Image (cartoon, rainbow, N blue to C red):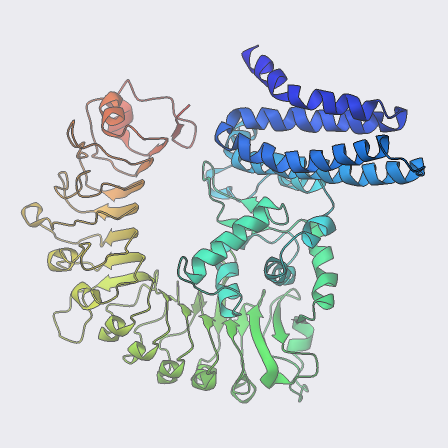
Length: 612
């Protein structure tokens, strides 16, 4: 009842305006009802998001004033005007106003997605491992608000160009956000400035496309920030024609075209992609349709799994900016392999190459020394190259490199010292603290000159003693580090009495995996991490959490505890007292907690608790 009274009060300012439209005649009755429904939905959303109510209503006020001015100008006009002109003008302005309201409604629905997802995700309806299979109607309904062409035309030119690149992905494909953003950066569409990095600009662009409803968010349960997206079929069809109008030359080569043995011209980007199905293809973009292979700007592996590349043809890609041969799909079991890696020796002549991805490609043991000549390279993605054994010693020559991902490269056992020379590096994933004591192995102390490093993930090799390295994790050495992940090897020996003193007051996210200690980590306390928002601890022998003191409490908003068979605490109230800002917790496969703590809050089937 209270909610209804509040909504009624919020709708009150619009009533006089609606009566004025209604007085114009029965032709506007349907518009009045549609306007009422839109206002009702909007005020319901505003009751949840009061902090932005004034801004939203101010946006609408201008549109309403324009309509009101048009009506009054007609009432007080001394000349005789055609009533049809007034009706046409009013229809246009009212439709625009209604469309604006509905865009705000979409924004609220996007932010309320987690609640809607809870209602749809009852036990048995969605397996934990298939979070990406979002109900089609749930996501498609968002595009029924306005025609996709209207939304596209309202975009700024840079956003339009970014969106057009998504048209090359297969229908219903689930696309990882990072793959899109890295492609935009490689094409030069995202550039850094004094207030944001190129990746942060890409994140903002992705968010704007979501808010406009032109891409559909796909996220894990209770994850407020979608990590993937997909295109509605109507948007995808629209983008095909818009790409041609914009002069973007996307060419998609099918398996049949790529496997022609008599193809002697330069039209195909690779001489052969041995295929097991007829659905495999690659995409290239050119500067124009008249350009031959040396005019290619991008080569994107859409679905090819077996790469057999002709070295001579590959060496002609001198102007290429983006080379995405690896996996972009979210499924880690999507297999890609190369028959021979000799073609990679041509990489050194691609002086304009900005983004190189070999993610998930098997049978790449070594990278050619010519890689060090890629002085324009910004992003190097080698994630899950399971056969990769070492990185080039001269990797320090890649002076413009901002992103390096070597995580899940299980045969790597060390890092080259040249990493410490990559002064522009912002993201480093998969750094290995090895067992080696030789001088040619890079250690954390060699990275302390990387003042732009924002994200760092560390793998401590089995048997390695990492105390000396982890002690380097201090703010004065890594002043911009906001995200840190540490994974210990299964048999890593780190005596509790030598636990390192890590202190990163600016850290916002900490992810600890397979902790070897069988007692609390002394350095893991709220005083050392005063602005930490996300704390994840998964696997290992942790027995208790440092809950701080009455004067020092955690600022953590998201706490995830998984696969901790020894973790114990007195009761849930202690946790709530130590984590007063906690909004979301995940407690999964922690048997002692569930067995002992009767005060543990009600968790859903996936072990989540959300603050009401």
